[in-house]
Amino acid sequence: MKEIIEIYMSRGRNAEHFQLHAAILAAVTEALATQYRISSVREKYATVFKMEDLIYLQNQAYANTKEMDAADKECDTHFLTFKSAVATYKNWPVEGKRIASEKLTFALEPFKNANGKPWAENRAMITNCLQVLRSDTYKAYVTELGLDEILVLLEAANNKCNDLMSDHLEEKRSREAADNLKVVRPQVDAAFELLRKAINAVYLMNELVDQNADTEAEVGAVIDAVNKFLLGYSATLSRRKAGTKANVKPGEDLPVDPKPEEERPGEL
Image (cartoon, rainbow, N blue to C red):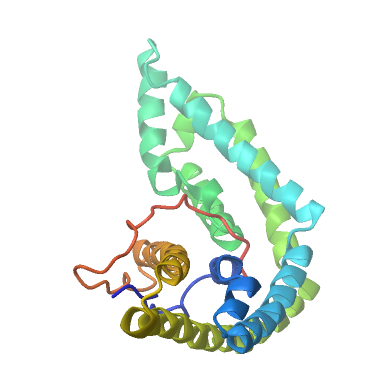
């Protein structure tokens, strides 16, 4: 029988959790809930999600100020410029520069995706990367390629980001928002669980009693849409080792597990 699957939601990042429930609410429309007499269940779900929406967006509005965005972009640009410059010398005809490129490419390997990480992780990786590149093992290679100047710029940009990140007001607001979300998110998940059961019950009742083809198609389409979002969420957590993949039984009528692009949501 077709049904909305059950997954573990609590370990998703705030952005992932927010996006999941926003997508589900869009799929389970008010009109459909009214037609199948589950409006009260959907309304409760929508009401508690509005609380999460408000808290999440307020926090995002503060965290993503123009100043912080500009500083982060500047730091990422310097880092990518350094990586690009190192790669330029990969096949350089002068042996010394070619070797320097090989050594620095090896040194950069653990940090190569730093610019794609969430804010705090980005800062830590850049800081560690600078320490490695300025160590006795690699500093001569940096000089060989004439890249000392870009490292100075990278360090200055990263320090600016760290100063913004450690601002007392930001920490206070982030803690408050995080605490609020810790309270609201389980409420949203619980409200969705009721809606999940209600939709599954509608589909089951139709299959066993009414056997209406239109109902089967309409409610079945909603189940497919919601399962697509749930599987994507579950797969994202599984790849990050923050949870297990959804437990899907053989033969269940579910969409193929999607592979969404990696996100870089701002986190609390």
